[in-house]
Image (tube, rainbow over all chains, first blue to last red; front, side, top):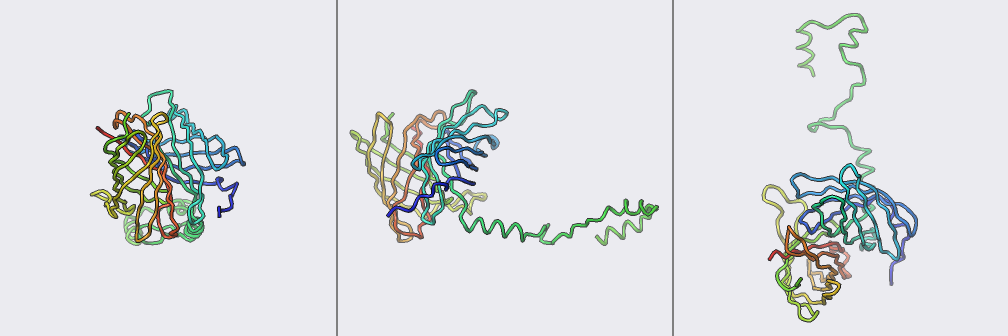
Amino acid sequence: MEKPRKTDSFRGSWTGQLIDIGGFEGQITLTLRGNEGTVDGLFDALIEGQHRPTRMHGVVTGRLANRKFLLRLDSNPKESAASVQFEGALFETRRGVPALCGRYLVSARQPSALLGGVMCARQPLPMDKDENVSVRSALPITRGGATLQRDERAPAKKRAAKKGRVQRSPTRKATSRSAS
Amino acid sequence: MSLSGQWEGKLIDVTGVNGLLKFELKETRGRVEGDYSVYFLSAAEGGCCGPEHRLVQSGTVSGEYDPKKQALRIEYDLSIAGSAARVSIEASLREALPHAKQALFGCYGVNTEQAGLSLEGGGLVLWQYA
């Protein structure tokens, strides 16, 4: 029996990978929104395999009908004048996570190393979402394994100046350094 | 553009699993037959010596090719940790100069009842260099 279709399952954040037939690989993040039929949002891609990684980001527009995406990804004109046409299908993994996969073609008004390729992405696993929230909220600020206590007070010199005296004694400085 | 010959490339699964693919295809009047091998890559490895190739699978592929649309549809059977799966690929053929002579790129789906299998479906690119 076919699984019930979630009409709004495309909304949200997607992370995935792409391979270009020009020999490049990359990671992509999509943030999609919209209603049944129309899709818009943002994309952020990091293409590796060139002399240095190339970052592209911009806007996504397009439509979704019968679980088929037809998206256009327009990069920020300051980065490159490339436009990507993505045609893919929406499906659900066996764990019920929305995923997409499809082919893209590149049209560029200037020479582009990207020729076209495949891109697949999925939404975060339910566990990922919970973990991110709990880990971030519980994570202390650490450096080298030691928890840093943020000193909210003004620097010692400022405090001393406020009190009307400046610490000039080298002995005091050395003592305070060794203590820290 | 001809489909027959050796192809090698990579697959990316939506789960994050990556694999290296090699195909040896022969096309006759739209009918495609050949051999495949796939090496799955561990995402955790990738230090100085590159990712480790493991879980080698090999077998036969069969399918159809439409030269007018340059569209390929092939299938092969895969077995991972005792779980059988049928992989269906839909791909397009296109020139890939200057990186390679031509490329096959498309998506695959995995038809299996096994819930524990880490492959869900994704994309693949195969290149023919000579």
